[in-house]
Amino acid sequence: MEFFNSVNFKFIFIFIVTLKLLLESYLVFRNISSIKRNKERIPSRFKDIVTSQEYSRAVNYNISKLRFQIVSSFTSSALLLLITLGGLLSLLTKIATETTSSNVIGAILLGVLFIIFSEIVGMPFSIYSIFFLEAKYGFNKTTVKTFILDTIKQFILSVVLISIIFSIIVIIIQYFVSFWWLYAFIAVFIFQVILFFVYPTLIAPLFNKFEDLSDERFKEPIEKLLEKVEFESKGLLVMNASLRSTHGNAFFTGFGKNKRIVFFDTLLKTITPNEMEAILGHELGHSKLGHIREGFVITTLFSFFSFYILGWVFSSDNFFTAHGLTELTIFSKILMFYLVASSYVFFIRPVSSYLSRKREFQADDFSLKYTNAEHMISGLLKLSKDNASNLTPDPMYSGYYYSHPPIAERIKSLEEKF
Image 1: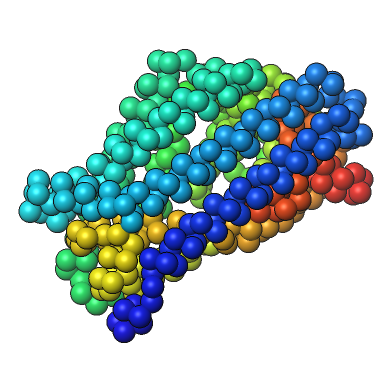
Image 2: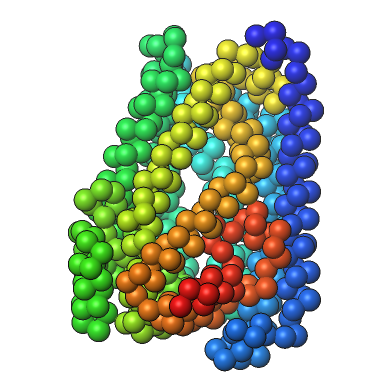
């Protein structure tokens, strides 16, 4: 452990947090500048579908979101330093250890205290985002009652999940001295797989209602497409997304033979059956091309690597005390490690964003084999309009953050192929 004793972790951590904040701010300001430079002229490809008033609304909406992102970033950085170097995690750990002598119960209690703290500091930001920012531009449909119920459900679910995960890891560390991190990884991996299977039927219905797609205008072409691409689905479902927002989307849920296709009810109100078929063809592409499996493998490997690093630094008190932790327990070390790691992970985001955008282009190409490119383009145009998407993002910002290519790039790629 000589290495850990010789490294100034405190200095490195402050440097990383500061660098992350500066980079985030720089990218956001670049994106705001890009939007402002183009605010007077609608991009030519969108002139036929977006009015001047709608474009102005999208410009103001995206600038407002970016400014809110800056405030959130500064607040998150300050809170991270407060929790770590400021000693808040040590205080919460002390409360937990003085309440019980059991490592497992102490771990659960610390997790609950941390969730409560996170909910308290995050609440004003959630309220502003939903009831002010989204509402100002006509997107919010969430009532106060729905918001309160969502908050309570999310809190209970978070407590249950973190209690299970913390308990598993603490018990494994207590009983396995060598390679405990490997056993912990395997246990958490199995738990995550179980969650994948139970999410569609047990967790998702806690927050939304799901009904079978009954509109034959959409159902018939979708079923034909599924047969054409030889895709087995456990159901075509419509989710009451309009309960909270006017934004539209579609996605897969479930795993293996338990896959379901879910459409936002807001999406069905804005696009035609042909456009829906093309958009679904894109989603099917992700499955048939192995993107979902690939993403799962990458996530698993990343989880394995994080557990390996945790196992490596776990026995070094210097690593944790340098980051402000004075109450050294099994569970406080685990929580501190992942809090610190979150800042480092930010710098590999461009890699995951690039790989994600690459898969999006591949899924578009897959859709073109079975559906009409013009329908895909018109569907994407409607989605970008209805969601008030940023039509002129800064290339550096989109390259760093965007999991999907900018809408103009996707349309250009589609036009070149038909």
